[in-house]
Structure formats: structure tokens, C-alpha cells
Image (cartoon, rainbow, N blue to C red):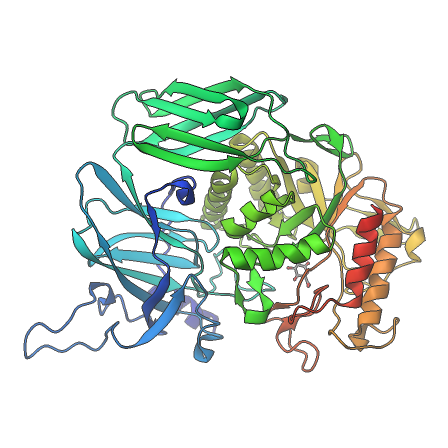
Length: 590
Ligand code: GCB
């Protein structure tokens, strides 16, 4: 079985790891158009499309020619959107799905064109007018290709091959507790920009300063020094810069911004321009630090009242991808009284991240390095590095993001410790203004002292330790909640990043019987956890698992689960369970 899988994997899935960067915030450029909508599609379970050259989207040219595929008059799929939820036959599908559409463009020697994909899961191959433009692996971060040389004046033919087959050397790998949605999950943009344009920028407070905005502008295509301008009208900033030989301009600007905070998430319209090119962003300024066991937002201790969620709309049984989807999820977060979210278990789309920031939510963002990772395989380290770089690259201007997390629930070993140690170092080298976190499910209970402790080298290297412990669910409470002590990550802030249990909405039963799947059992479980939390001296945040019931191929129990993880405080139909009010009351008190 295993050999067969590997054989198929080798046939269908050439691993291509091209270090790629993409433009910062294409949504903020005036010359970007969305290529969203209905695309033609071919389902290709045996991975035949490359041999048969689907990417040529050829039509018979002579009377004797015939072709055994066509994108015309067949399946149509919504982009953005996962394919699994769009057709019953694709529910469990893993393999290749080919997408095709046309778009019109105008060739202009003074300008350059790019295709920007906000997220394709898990691996994408892209062809334009029959020519290969590139590949990307990793389902949750953007990638782009320049198509200036390949684009035609008039009609262009775009073909994208998407493969969502799990693979032993993937991130995530073979088993994970959420639905393996495949497809062009997020927006696709055609971006047309002048030859020299703003590729990247960082505009944030300098570490340790509340009155110094520092960062850089990186141009693309600048052959000689260019005049760059940063304007933040509300702060009276209009700063001229000159790019160096590498197209980079570094700056520090004295300013007294009103700081971004949960109750008043101030964002400033910021424009960066070079010649006719301009990109606009809404940027917030704040500081986040650790002092001893405290988390300080703008110098003030803060308790993180959090919640986890997947990038999924349960009612649609599919991936979330739009502004409206972000609003649906985040309104429920706000109703719960949160000031913090953990976007489990991967970078979620920019609509969610940006809307959360506008709402004043602090964010823990993580790469999908979730259990079962092949730490001994060097290819996996390369992939993790790429995913981490892409996540930080995309979101480095988001004041809402306070913690970059490098892994969830990994088992200590020589290789794992080394890999995660390197990822923590890399994170700090890429961004010294935020904190590094990781989640651990391995604190152990010592009966003699009624104390949980954690022996893990990685916990020593991160700034903030997240623990995932399901007391009352996967592990019974080993003593009365008030008697349980925690000596985990002493001296640092500890966040309970996951806790909870499963209940089916509307199911009532005993507060003492886990397999009653009842709302009452889980309601009581939350009460007990909250009692225990009172005794954790360095606890600086809590994050129940999870906001909504979510789909998972790991949940088999008929009647109660039926393919759903039922730990949602809110059901798959959007109804609040009894535990929701326990968390709400806990947060109202905090
Ligand atoms: C965990 C994982 C999360 C699972 C959850 C559960 O520890 O981090 O991805 O979904 O437990 O429900 O078991």
C-alpha cells in the first residue's frame, strides 16, 4: 500500500521548491484585476494531464485530428473556492484538478504583468498560452509569476494544475485533523504595473520605540536610483527617499502615531509610490513585548482572551475565502468577547487577517507544521523555511499579528529540536518586532506534587509557550481542578492555546459522562478548566478549541460526529452551545 502511494506520488508530484517572493499587497494597487469567477475544469485522478498536454488547451486543427480532452462544455468550478465542496464526487478527492480560463490583456512595453495567487492547495503548476510559468508548493501562502514576456495582446489562455494529494514529506503531512480542501482556494489577480514598481515594504514602529516609524521600500525593476515617496497624511508625513543600487530605500521617520490597541485599533492610510506606481495600505503601529511572565501591548500588561478557528464556513462545508466569510467568522469572535485569535493551523486568507486587525483582534499566526512531520528529511526543513518566510513576508505590516508560531504539537527528538530551533532563529532574524511562539501538548502530570511540568528544549527557545491540554476530554482531570498546579514555562508568558471537548448541539445528558456527547458535559468541562486556570501564575491568555464545529476525516462516530470535530462552541449550523456562555462569562470577568 505504502509503496503504491509513493509510486503514485512520484509520478504525479514532482517536488519543486523554488524560492519565490511576491508583491506586497496587490489589493492595494490600482492596476490589479481579480480573475475570480467560474473557471473550466477537468478532474484528472490518474494524473494524465501533463502527458496529454492539457495546458495547451488545444483544439483539433485538421480533419484527421481528435483530442480526448477539452475544457469547453465541461465542469465549471468557482474560483476562489475549494473543489471538494463543489461537487459530491470531489468530496474525498485527492489528485489533480486542472483549471482553465481566458482573460484579455493589453501589451505595453512600458509595463509588466504578473499573475498573483493568494492561495492554492496544495501544489500548483501554472501555464500561460501553453507555456509553463512556474510551480508552487504550500496551500496557505501567496505566490506570483511574472508573465510580461508570455502575455498576448488580446486573449490569453491560463491553465492551472492543482494537486491536493497528501504526501509524507508535505507540510502538513499524511494525517491532520481538518479537511484537506484542495483547489484555487483564494483570489487570483492579474496585476499590471510600471516597469519599476514597489515590490515590498515594511512600515512599522522600530523595536523599542513608540515615536519612530522604521522600515524599507523594495523596488522591482529599478535600474538606477529612483525617487520614492511615503505619505501618511493623518500624521503629516510626506517622506522622500532615494533607492540604492539594489532598488532598496531604508528609512526612519519621527512620528507620534496613536497606537493600535484592541479597544481602539487605529490604522493609518499609507501610500508608497515610485513614479506612476503607487500602493496603498492601512497600517497600525503598536509594540508587543515580553517582560518576565507578562505580555505587554504598548507597554501595558494584557491578557489574551482568545479563540481558535479554521478557515472554514461550516454551513457551506467549504473553505472561507471572501470578505463576507471573514465577517461571518469574526462577528462570532467579537460576540464572544475576544481580543485575540489563533488562526489554526496555517496562515488564513488576508481578508480574515485584515478584518481581524480592523476589529482590534491580536493574532497568533502559524505555519501548518502539525504533528507527524518528517523532521529527518532535509526537504521538509526547506519547505518549512519557505512557508515561514512567505507567512512573515505577507503579514509583516499587520499590527494585529503579535506572535509567529513555528509549530503545533511536535514530539521532541534531536532533529525536531534542531529544526524548530532553526525556525525560531530565522523568525527572529526576519522580524524582531514580534514574538515567537509554539504549541506543546507534552506537559506531564506529576501525581506526587499534583503539578504539570514541561521538559522540552524548544519551549526554552520561544518567547511565548502555548499549551494544548484537553483536561476532561483526552485526559481526565487528575485531581480537583483547584488542586492542580502548573509549573510550565515558568518565567515566561503561558497561553492555554487549546482546551475543550466535544458535544453535539442539542444533545443533553450527564455532566459526568464524556460519551454522552452532551452540551452539559462540555459546559462543566469548561467550568473546571477555568477553575484550574486561577492557579496558573504565568497564564496570560486562553484560547478554547474551537469556535465552530469543523469537518475532519478523523472523526468517525456515527450520530455524533459523522465526519465533524464537535468541539465547536458554536455548531456547524451556527447555534451556540451551552459552553459558549461559560467562555463568554469568563471573558466578561477578565
Ligand atoms: C489538537 C490539535 C487540533 C485538533 C484538536 C482536537 O491538539 O492541535 O488540531 O483538532 O487537538 O480536537 O483533537
